Image (cartoon, rainbow, N blue to C red; front, side):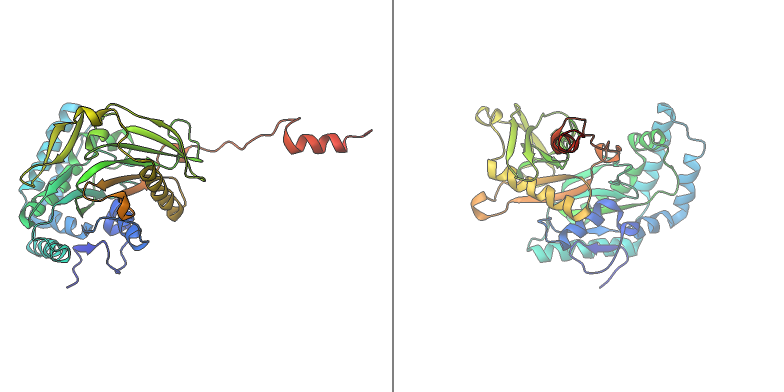
Length: 357
């Protein structure tokens, strides 16, 4: 049954970023385009608004934000107050029922009673060219069971008011009130290898290159800066690797033995200083990033993972976890190329047409 509070990634129903946020809208668009996106569903912004409308929560949040200045002490106190209010607020029954039904249907489709999922934010303005919000909101990984999903969704909503998110908005001149967030619930990939790829060279903005970064296990240790990834510089046209830099990778995040949450473990010596991607996998990921860029018409920054249970011999293995606009070089004005006197074809024509020749 259709609900305004949830929407499957593979749904044919129309819904834009105003209900889904940039991250989830991109996942639905890539799913429809045939990209290898792990299945899932969105808890829409309508669900978040239903929570805020309950028991005067919206007014209480606005009151807590009134007069807030970017002082670390004030931010910490007000942020903690708001997060507690959101987490403690009982989720409206229609929303809870819709999320529970969507998760159970999702599990039925996959054939597992409690599929492990990632629960991550898709806030208004998040993953946009002007404000990526990368790392500002909380993500919850390897969540199992309907009750745990409901709790993670509520905590994801509350992370709109983490200290770092409040300060990020203040630093970038963004509003603090009237915020909205959708939440993506996506099947976890038991990643042998994961990472990111960007369709310009982050070092110099060269749009003819793709950089693929990779570590063992889940990608959070790369995002946090705790593990330096391998880096592959790929020619965007030829899809050939120009340069590979292999970094020592001493730790990885993997699923806990009981199937709930993640654990950190040491990478055995034989894997620490070897590339965690085979050359065909580098090309596959570069092609996936290039596909996202072609679809959106602007440079993209993607996150990807390769399931440890799949092998290259079985065909495509890289899964697209998210895509967002590249937010650094894309915003810089391009300087038109200048051809100086005496260079290239213009020089030849100048010589041939010069009077007296």
